[in-house]
Image (cartoon, rainbow, N blue to C red):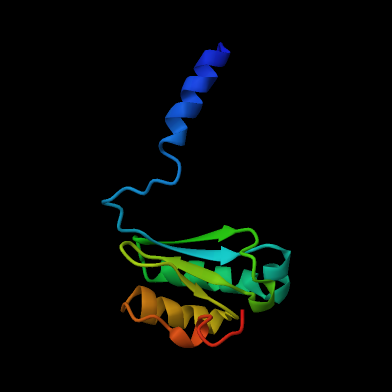
Amino acid sequence: MKSLEELKAIREKMQGQIGLRDENDDTTKIVVGMATCGIAAGARPVLKKLADEIAARNLEHVVVEQTGCIGMCQFEPIIEVFAPGQDKVTYIEMTPERAVEVLEKHILNGRVCTEYTLRDKNV
């Protein structure tokens, strides 16, 4: 980078790309809240179990990522599922076992596990 103009050009180019998802992208993303509250509540084993299960099942179109605070500390560990063409689903009070259940029922079979969502909570 040699000038301020070059930096501005790069910034403008990237702003147009940020947040855009490729329409042909069929990847399902599972995001695990890994802020201090999530870690304290047990998010690490949830993240590890999901990553291990995805690898063991060779699920090429499913990725697991971590993020910071999701904003609902009282419901940690939290995972959010972003599936192509579907609304985001937020799962609360996850355990490694529940996370595998979400993977099997929701990700692989398209059935949301409503018993682990916020539907009955007073938020």
